[in-house]
Length: 179
Image (cartoon, rainbow, N blue to C red; front, side, top):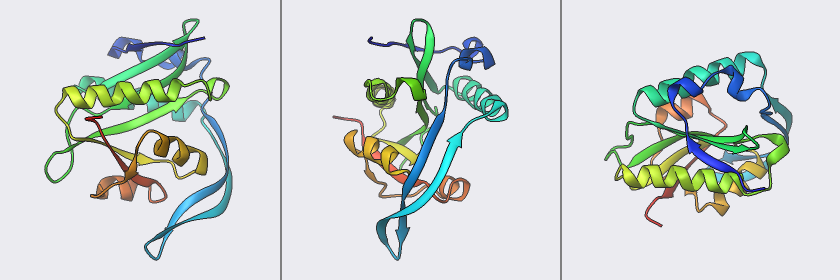
């Protein structure tokens, strides 16, 4: 079933929105930069959000909307199955980037093209804002990185120090929005 995508307003972003959403990922291998080269390393863990992570997410997404950013949800049968957020303030030395701050698809809805549609919505938002590229501080799991590569992402030419300090194991990526 094709999801319905729609931009979310601040009043829609609450704990109830995520009542059926499952942000769970079993990770076995991750990309790591060692001595200037990217390698795949065993790093097994389960990334599974609980109540406190969702409460933090709700605050972050509400702030994104309040600061002129973009939050879009993908719904199937009126249940949230994915979401993307792009911050409203450009970043980078030439303010060339819009920061794709989150993109997630519920565990039960992966592999259906929802992530691709959400990513395209983020690119459209960035294009409308006259940005050159999206900046993504992305989960380093092999599967997550495969998704970003399919979307056309490459290693960022300019790293955001704030993002690197916040998530040192993330891969810093960029994606041109003109295409």
